[in-house]
Image (tube, rainbow, N blue to C red):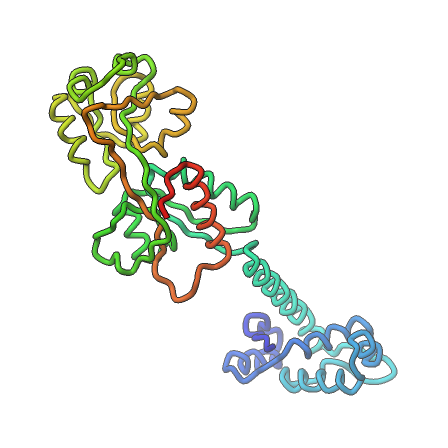
Length: 331
């Protein structure tokens, strides 16, 4: 294995300056065995003892040091009854140590990346599933792999696609089917299908009725929230907003706050309000004369020449498991 010492050998005198130029020009080739032999001779103070600790013959150590000296352009050791570093060797020593340390760190990083312990995960998601789906999945992976680097973004459908197409992220959660230009460059990993439910505060008049129809929603659900959880505002939601006469088009975070305070009603994806429903901060109200609303999403991957790295594969598996736990996984 060869080590490029271009970054490790600054100009510490005229001789070293020439060595550095040679390395930059690509003419120098120093291998790990030469550096290891050099550092072991420095430590042991003897070619013979260095050879013994390395488990090789003394002539092999001498050959490695000779090849290294040919590359740096001068003697690294004074030979005699006692082996000592020359001024050139003294100047070369810290950079040899740094080179072997960097290489060792690189090999360890590669090993950890191969086992999923190190690496970088990039993901963009619709904001409406960022907490209920993505958050728990990432928490699971982060706990098992604390050394991973993360880039996670939340956006609307178009924003997630832009990040995928630009190569900023590798994974994305988008509305499906995706008919946008460039969608052919996406690989669908699995589908999600989640219910969309009318949500109100526990004390809201709609929550106290035994049966609710669209007329009740239009009459009692003012102001009515026009939430965009599809590509555009869903036609049924638009029709109800028109019947209500008073509607609000606000971000989903704002909408959730308003509904919890009893100040509005709206249709929310169940993943977004799963905890609120479970803890009775919000109530799902069936609308009997309205066909059940759902939306289909997909976890997709931008086209890459290689399979997902182990950290990315771990995130895909965690997202699939969280979707299964939420009851929205559809293959």
